Every structure is written in structure tokens, then in C-alpha cells.
Image 1 (tube, rainbow, N blue to C red):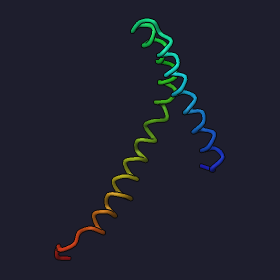
Image 2 (tube, rainbow, N blue to C red):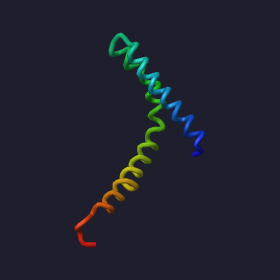
Image 3 (cartoon, one colour):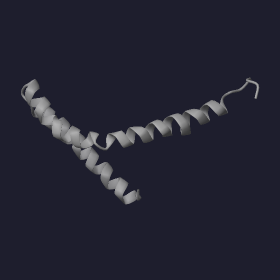
Image 4 (cartoon, rainbow, N blue to C red):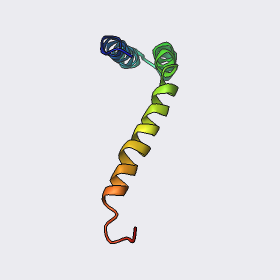
Length: 77
């Protein structure tokens, strides 16, 4: 994904999150709040599955595995 596209997607995701927070704050009851935040959260979560998968790979393989390999002092090779 080009940097420009990632930048604009990040802006739009932030707009969705802020919109959900504002609409939740504007609700006068639990029902108002719940109904108001469903559309922005749903639009945000559709992209979340791919992002979670990428974060799992990045965090577990690229960070944790390298950290483990670097700091395994005193163990036989």
C-alpha cells in the first residue's frame, strides 16, 4: 500500500473512532449510545481483521522472535 493511501486510511479510521466517541457522549441513555456507535464501529471493524493479522505477525515474529534470539544468553546453541 502506498504511503499516501495509508495516510488517508489512517485519517478516515481516526474520523470513525472520533465520530463513535462523540455520538456515544451525545447519547442520553444506554440505548442511544449503543445504537449511535454501531455504524462507525462496524465500518472500522471490517478492516480490523486484516490489521489484527498483520499485528500478530509483526509482533510475534518480527519483534518477539528477534527479542528472544538476541536475549537467550547462557543457553547452549
